[in-house]
Image (cartoon, rainbow, N blue to C red; front, side):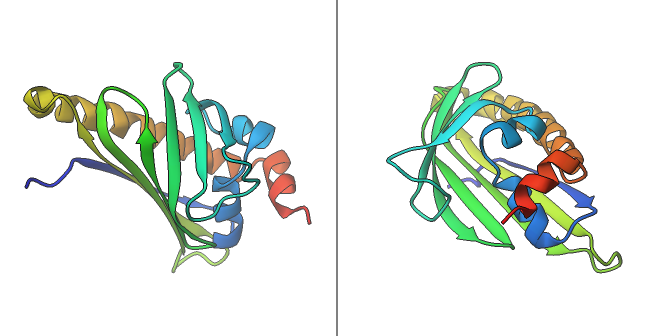
Amino acid sequence: MQDMPSVEARVVVPVTPDVAFAVSQTTGETRLRWDPFIRRQHFLDGAERPAVGVRTRTVHRLGLAMTSEYVSFNPPTNVGMRMVDGSWFFEKFAGGWQFRPAEDRPGHTVATWRYTFATRPDWLAPLADRIGVWLLGRDIRRRLDAFARGCTDPVVLSAVEAP
């Protein structure tokens, strides 16, 4: 079996890993303030906060919808999600986010985001995978740049630092 395609982006943000992790997990208006990827996002099944097994419904800015499930949740170092259902284009889709202290910059964090996916139908996968790498590569970079801006936005920081 061939490895699934993936895209990855990395940025250094001027906050500690716990704050960077908290920004990445914001919801509602705070999330919409920094995340250009989504139009709407909410927890499902009565969940009020992220945890392994919690499902979310996300509507992309272009109207595509996806139900995802947390497969890992380890504040403040990493989180992982997988698609439960969504776009006809993806047979499988997963995302992972890691947050590590920047070794040479105290008080800063290296944030690494990675998407792994498989496209469908199988006969189209050789071309669809290349398109997916290009589109998702562009999207993940834009989204991570927006995340970095969110990590300097006083409104976002106030929301994650509030008790």
